[in-house]
Length: 529
Ligand code: AMP
View 1: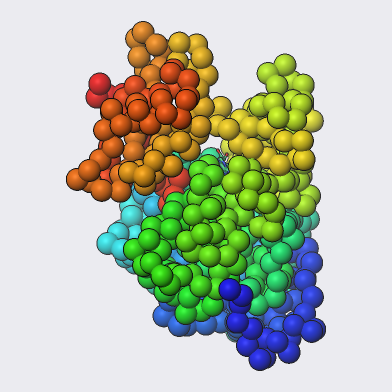
View 2 (view 1 turned 90 degrees about the vertical axis):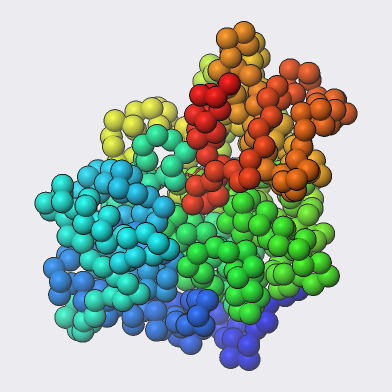
């Protein structure tokens, strides 16, 4: 159940220490100095980069970009798959002191154009084509309307130059200088650009390591797109502790599990959609764990049905799931300690991580007591310095600098976070608030159901009606309305909460990080009574 530590890694264990650094580049340099031969990155094609090779490759690419005119303080966007070269590009741009705008590969002309206009990026790096999408053509279309923008096709290749030509790494005010602009992953109409500093990003990586006992020679299976803020946070965690990253350019459960197993992955996850994929894969392969060395799964980004933790523990093995609560704006905000009780791992998102404070606030502005739901607000090291669009900031922060997350939840008496819904994700039926999550958790536990989303649909009599959209295990034997009603009655939930409409779908629409796109479901079913 535990990681295989090679002999050379074993020797390093005695000298290894966690690295605290002020900037991302300093972290790269310090890690390369401490464990030069440790394999930092591996991909599905068995390509690897040690810590020293990573530093070297990043410096050469930085010199290449410099020769092409990229300067400290420029803004560079990159819309690239999870390739080793992408991670090197991040290091190269960090070396140069560039403001980076990682863009999810699922973004198309509209969203990509929005990010580029808003950030005023001078360079966009894309693959030529990837998974059937012509990114070079899309970039060219978008660039036509943006005269200041250059496009560079970086197809598993980066510019190369002599590191001796580089200027010194620029000094930075690490808590103020914006080095990262991450766009939220698209559950709202327009993406919002969250501005992070090296300080906020490094703090998130450290907090994750501390809470989840990340240790030298752990290996993290990166199933989600590296362009998500979690990609940077996990890389920084890896640089801090000497945790290897095992990457796959696109997620496929069976292929990813095979690559992770081959490379002795000890931590995996990302979000509930990924936990679920591995659980389903395990069920198709009974008897042998599909992730035999994984100590626990780790992630956040969406509500998790409590049962999932037990399913992972029972069926895949290890400690289960150390789920957390986080967002693009504040990175990992709370996360479970995987050695905690099942009760905590199932029903909570853990306690606030190192450097972060969390409170639930009532509509009158007062702080809610333990166990009482309110709007969750957060403050601390990993919170962004603000949105790029200043107009959004007045509402985003309260007078005392707490970020209003828009999530509803509470802290229990021991300070564990319980997210019960989203401000916008409650169903108001006949004036009564109904938590979508409560019904989703219940439906998830139904034997015929793989996953479920519960939404409110406009209704003349009730204001909103409760609609359940479910993905079923067997398309030939889907959940029926009668079974749903019976099941909910047996669970003894309030009659008002029982879904009044049931839609069975082949697959729920999800964004790149696996979050169910409820706005799409609302639009789909509001239009079709
Ligand atoms: P994003 O910035 O796109 O990663 O989305 C962040 C949002 O995902 C949060 O504001 C929550 O609404 C949701 N989310 C993240 N973690 C959890 C969690 N543990 N439970 C419920 N919702 C979550």
